[in-house]
Length: 610
Image (cartoon, rainbow, N blue to C red; front, side, top):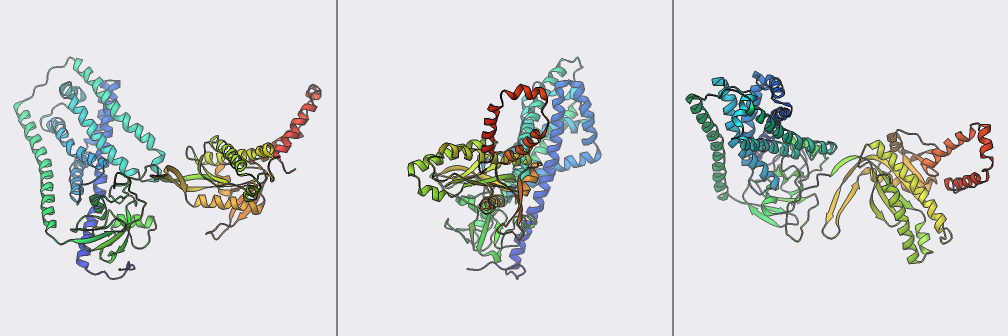
């Protein structure tokens, strides 16, 4: 078995590798061109549909907004940019489709391709009847005139065109952005806007069209020259587009005939057998062709790293990573031998191993699509654990011990959920909870500390309730840390689906919890969490906690009791120092005995060690 060569080692078969590298380079910059041109077209469609939506306010408002829009898109620069994008985008989209070596793909990719092929059927007629005839014959392009031509005979087709264009553009934008961490913050507003814009555009179109229909305007006169030019231009434009589609289909057919007569290579998929096939497809396309379970979030565009594989044999015969692949591999700090399956097209024997988890269910192999909710975000993690639980369990009957644990976890669950936290795991006599999944990071940190206070109070209450039956009092240690963590869901056919949180933040919170035993504190909160809350807490002891894997110790603060109670004690002391008015003293003198009992009880709860 060949080992991956170090960077800078000469590669054999340079001619073949350079050919593959050149293909990857073309694929890299064509993707960027396709993206930019698509964004230009979507921007134009957005302004156009918002102009439609103004029809709710009347035709005059639509005309005024259209004057502003015309100043942008009918200018020389605007015209070149718009129509350049209109030509470039479908050409490079077809090039992207032709580069595929298998047409087994997720349904959403098939839908986007089908929409792209259907749009010119309706779009060409609209462009020729407005922009082209307006330029050559001075045909009125105002909303008054265009709406009268469209309503009601072509209203349905025009509405269908609007929905096709908008759905195609929004699908592309969504699948481009969903792998980015920041997208989760405005995914819901994005969805709302994506629904409102076409809905308002259709409503404005219908309202304004009816208003235009009621206007007493002379009928439009269409000359024979206009009719002939319209039919000719529509035929030419559609013939050019679908002729190009036919040429690409012919190219694919000829390519398939050629490759089937060429030599075959052997590709071994670790854990999924060995396949023989002709060179050409990417490794991701091989996964799809042979039904091998895999992850592919971006659909093979080198925007995510979910399809990455470890090349165990044959990496020296692969071309170097292209710019997009190299950039992504650096971002994830990929070790040597790791490549993106969507970017490598092996020309020689290869052995690869899928790195992300994949599975087979009873229904057979299927493509795994990672959850869109998987992302990295700033969270506050709370790790709590009962102390001396082993000694306690040795002195309790099994039924009593399980009953106590059930009561303990029930109280802990209430304390966590009351502050909008989520318990990610119960383990033995401890648990881990996460805060900040909804709302700001500061709010999550504040909620975590408040929940820790409730947990300490709940343990004190359990000690009072079970004190006689317990050989040892319950004690708990809590570690809290704020930082970036990865959230998502893991799924198994036997255990089902579970939300989890992983990362360095979880590890640090766990080590802070372990440190509570050494520093004799109930709660240890990292300085990062305190700073994130934007608040100050009294009764804290500054600490330096050694963290595994870090050279410098972590600054943290220890609480001997619940943080809120420690803060309230300072406020109560300030209140007690204030002079009490004489009238108030006389009114409360008769009730002095009852508050004294309550005060004593509150002091015991606040500091049970006293």
